[in-house]
Image 1 (cartoon, rainbow, N blue to C red):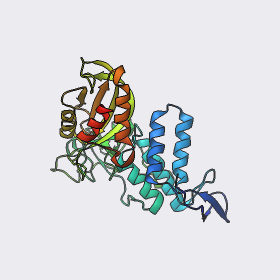
Image 2: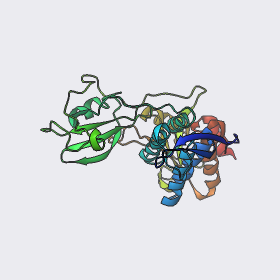
Image 3: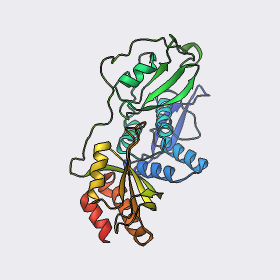
Image 4: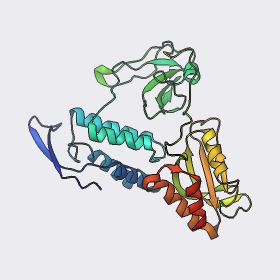
Amino acid sequence: MSKNKTVHYEYEHIDANSKVKISNYHPLSKRDIRNLLRQAKQTGSRIVRNSIQMRLCQGIKGCVYPARMTGEVAKKEAQISELYLKNKYNSPTNTLVNMLYKIMSTGEIKAETNSPIAVSVEELQQFGCPYCGYRSGHSSISGRGGVVWYCGDGECGRSCVGLSKGLSESPFGIGSGEETVYPKLQDHPRRGILAHGKLDKKPENGGEFFQPRGIGLDQTPGCFVCGGDPGLYRNISAFVQCKDAGERVVAMFNQRGAGLDYREHEPDRVQVKIGACKKHAQNLDQLDKLTSQGDNSGIITEEIIKIAISM
């Protein structure tokens, strides 16, 4: 963890009128955050996952459990918790790590100053997020012809209500108390501009973006070291930038043991799956280490593959 000195801040306790001093704030580095997220992904224990979420929130300036905070600290804590929970697999992507680090270290909050909007489900599917046009996302609440939809773009992450045909108002309220609103149907702000997915970007120094999800068992075309027949192998599943990028990653393995996992209903969650036989299990471990740690974390290159194969 970071070795910064403990910093003391003063914030108002939610249950008291007086100021209370909160100590033991321990800043987190990006590496700290990535390691915590990777640990969360690898364990199925809810207790451990909750503990890791708490540790992330402790990285906020002035926020130390079990004290409950108000004001900006509470907002930052809530935003970190939302990012952590919305990320289905808790995969330590560069975007997620950078966003968490930014909230913790600078306190910058992207506030939605406008009231939530409602658009038709048909237009949501056609034109994507009303704010940025990204096509992929997830829902948190649905029913009675409505759905609360969250944009899957890490730089946006905003929400809206999607309404089925025939509805002119959200069937459920957004907010709480006197601030609860029932968004009314409106034209999609980006009507006429088709939704878009992830851009086909590459790392500045070469290779492809590659986010391993750990080692497991899955069907692959064979072993990435010795070839073999398709079957159930010990494998690495990793998210890549897009379908084209995934095809380029598969090509790096010279048609040995690597396959593309692309699903039409999840066009922006493209994976490459790389298998290894029992004899070459250590080579797979090395590949996982080389692509998830150090300066090359989140990147794969032909040189990295050669190193993993030749060990």
